[in-house]
Image (cartoon, rainbow, N blue to C red; front, side, top):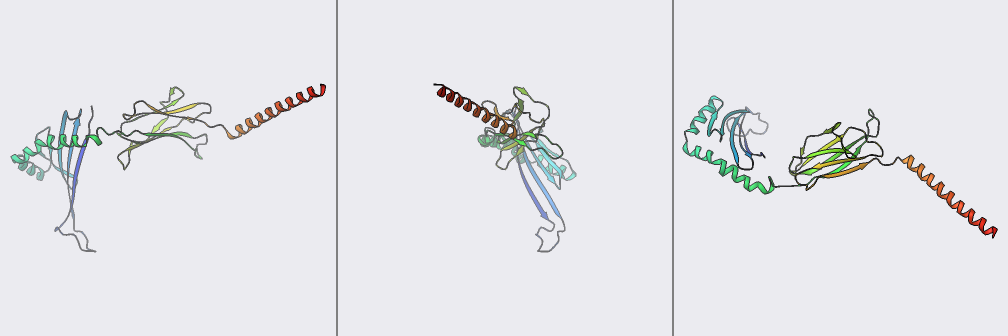
Length: 251
């Protein structure tokens, strides 16, 4: 079951006496009139609800709800407006038909770039350096970027074992290009010799997307192993050289 909402809003600020103030003049007052139109969809367009709200200075005056089929007033002024509109046959016909003419119509128009839009995420793992108050190897951060729609599941694994504890995620944050991003931090410090995976499941992906990470070898240990390897290799060449010299001398 899917549910979406389309909203349109008209915001008008009216200065008392109707004219904008001259440069340097002070406003004597501002009135704010807001109208919103909302469409709610359940199971595509099988069930549609159309709602119009009129709000004056942050207080809802009157509302039309297609589930009710008429206007409802919430203030004395709103009650008068609701009564007048409810007694207007043309207004009521227009509002009751808007479930189809406005909501269902715009659903079909916007379907290719809204309901059916799919943008796969890009996934990367980075090591967050430790802070001065929390020394150690740091923590692993999985960055899931630029995906659509917003519904997504991100899981951390250590080898084949899922790490369900000590995982902290941000909210799914919208980008300006109508995509989303999410950061998921593994608070358990990574251990050397183990493989960590960030697995992402999203409707745009045919199968889960995984990124793997391993602790890089310690620099000092790597140098020591390189030195030992060089020593052993040198010793082997020395032994071969001595053997060749002894055989040549004895012959």
